[in-house]
Image (cartoon, rainbow, N blue to C red):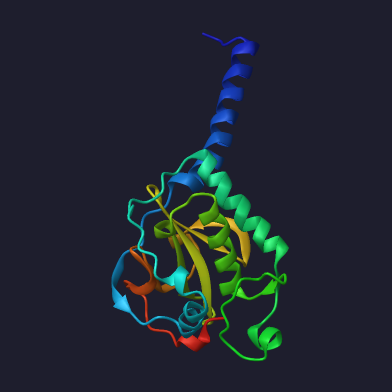
Length: 205
């Protein structure tokens, strides 16, 4: 039986609607959780940061369940990531402070990758997201250079907030090799990430 023109239009609209819906839903449901190992060394920059902000590095979150992924949560993390990326201007520690490996909040509007991470973590924590779900993470980029990103733990997997892109991606879709991140139960401790490899702490840019 031949369909009427109106029926064909309605089917087409429904198909387009499903495609659009899938386009926006996939990033929020596609990731898995990265596997972590045992305790590992703390990056020197974070060690020095903790000496200045001891209260921020001795927090023991009690709710260790990953954040619940919802459309509102997705909008929150993507918006904060993009806004911080736009607000902070990139500058190396050497140019900024005259030495390497300074982790600091970019309150003067300048910073490198760790500083973007700290600011995103600070803003999202103030919005009520547990620090157990906002983990500073050290990776190696495909070119071999060290880098820092923010891992957001959710019940739909781990997602990465990165100053090199406004797109929030599943951790295993970034092309990075994951090395270590903060422990979920202690903001001053770090754990290894399985299948990673050791990287010189001073190489983090």
